[in-house]
Image (cartoon, rainbow, N blue to C red):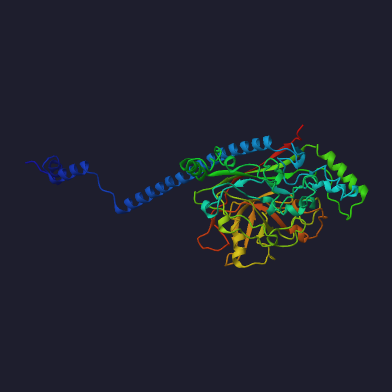
Length: 499
């Protein structure tokens, strides 16, 4: 009799296909065991993190693509603007207009250049002791804005609003106070042919006699890509509307700031009255300097207009709101023009910011050496009077990323951070892209332990504010959005006198 063990019996039973255990194992081999809830949750988290990482790639790629596109546009704009100015501008002189033998300033001048008219005097009423009056404006090395045209943001707001309008930056610069008084009386351009110049320096129908105070470049040439000439009013309405739509669709344009590298000719006389010998010497030096070649640092500013509905406020030219270049110790509150004067493309403002009253110096042995910490400037200046809206308007001009230019020394600064220091938003501290040293803005004082003078820590700068929101009404604009400046390139522009 053969004995059967339990293990042997179980082994024989497992070999039977009909056995329950074998059927269960077969099902396990065909259908793997399911994931647990914890495993599913971990997988979902990993998948979500991956999707988030992939999603962040798209805006970065879009931003890089936009930067690359704007870089290409900026290079094209700067090259075109530089070529335009080289072909258009010449050192300011005089020309004889035939058939009347009328002497006028020629075209192509730049603010800051020497303006000299050798026909003034002699004049029977002046005499030979005032020959220095032939110098209509002495040269300077401050930063000025090129006079260009723009378009009103609301063409129907005023008659002729669909025609180009002058930006008139020379009014913002108070250049009319720097130009010799001869501009304002009938001795210019020729006592035999009186042609009094009004406060706008309008030369009437002689559009070529522009000098710095007449627009040098039309808006159609400033936009990118440029447009053909604007159709005349006699053209069919659909033609004029088509041209206007093309202009409204442009997103980029350019502006120019410029600075004479070194003075040309005589400097403004300090003594009053001027002696006969000094008067003759000034006139002789100016006459010789008119043949000199001028070299300018030219700031080509590429501007972006993100939306077709954007509008940009212009600075009011009222004297009490304009900094005086000869009195940088006085704080003024800038004002804006009325909403009807808003334009389509960004324009430059001339305002004040306050630097710290004590800065580091790079001079050897200085007790206050550089720290490498970026400088912070205050806007508006602490002594600026005005209501909260006026002060907040100035704060709104300087969002993060803003680039502005010091009027005196031509240095370019960029705002890396704007920190609002008051709850009402009418004061802000701007962190610059580098440390500003005493050597950068000092006007010749010894470095030592001294603090900056009042006319040194208060700086007048050129800035292009963001678009404005006029929905709240009133004449105090609210600047919103980012800075319209895409880039700012500095090149050397050499103006050679015409042969």
